[in-house]
Image (cartoon, rainbow, N blue to C red; front, side, top):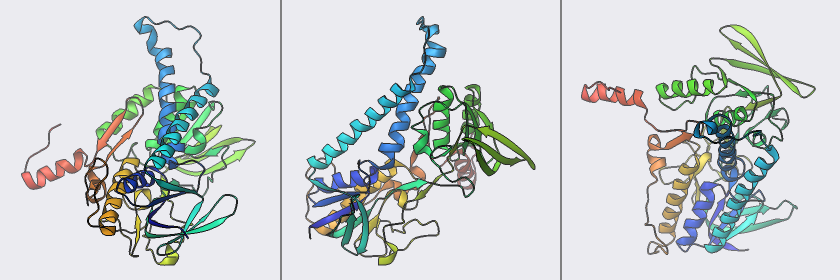
Length: 397
């Protein structure tokens, strides 16, 4: 049975960055990934492909609405969606190749298969062909990320009711697209398909879009996206989605009245859930909270000796760069415990604090619509409260 200093389960931004840092620090490292490609949701079906489509669709909008103002006249401009999707896939493949190279460069052993924790210090890996092997380790880092949340009355079928994963792979722009949830994912993908010709309607349960941003900015973003052609229905509670011959009817209530929306596709983007099931972590005593997130302390340690967790599977914002910071901090803590005298082999210093975990209000986040929006909490409202409370000073914007 092969032995490692650290085994990382999950190769998303948290996992593969943690693996790189562990390799740099001289730890014998294994990275376990259930999917064929490394990179997790962000690289394969999240951040990277969505930004590729946002860029391509933005170029089309420039040609369609802005180019002539610059004296650039392009007659007959149209979208070749197959070509656009090919470019997106090429971008993802390039990143996949880059992550593989980084694993080899930093002497990280990769295992393709589903990792389960059978005991503290032991991980079982079941490959796609059914073969199973076990490896031993002094430390396990759980970095399994998150998955889209399903609605009980709108289960994903991958065709008409879709998650962000399928919404990145449409072979044609749907005539009518209903998006349930006006957070970052819904706004970005809604923008893509709006630019490419879809009639996009966004349904949001809350009285505002882009929760987490300052309210003034959220309202401004909504106005800009409305001008671009997206229709918003706020304070709208979706109650049912019915499919008939490949078309959907979305039933919702607003101001006490029932309204219905017809759609060719329904994108459900109401959030993500921690991907903690299937690890068997609970069987070895790892504690979860009420949202099925793995409980950790300020050093990412679970209640079980030698088992750590980072990224979307623990509390805090579900963001790639947060997971990366936590991955680096976590393996540096592990390296210090494995050998207090360990020396760094490449640039970067040892640290024992992840700012994103200890100070979650300082985590930056963004919505890559047009315009692009970025924010770092706390927003104006809590800052104004603090100013009034401690300084007796009103905040003027």
